[in-house]
Length: 70
Image (tube, rainbow, N blue to C red; front, side, top):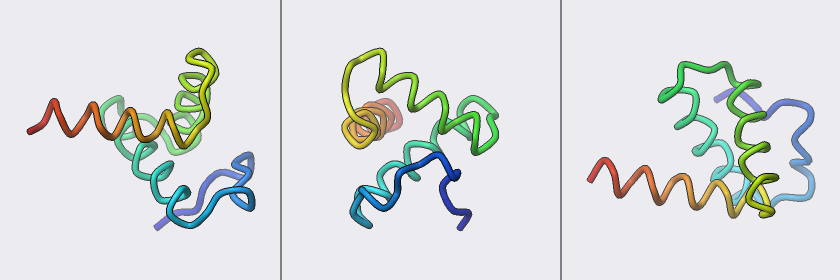
């Protein structure tokens, strides 16, 4: 599995949180045909616009996607 882009402050996140961010990033990559870096940037922008953290934004995206595909 590819690692997060160098801009990701992964040292501050637990392993579980890193997996959440990776999963959300992968969702964006597949849904929007983005590169890893583009998907991470989009996820970061989404978190900034909603004034929330990357982990919280990742949880929201994963939850929303699971509801839409269920």
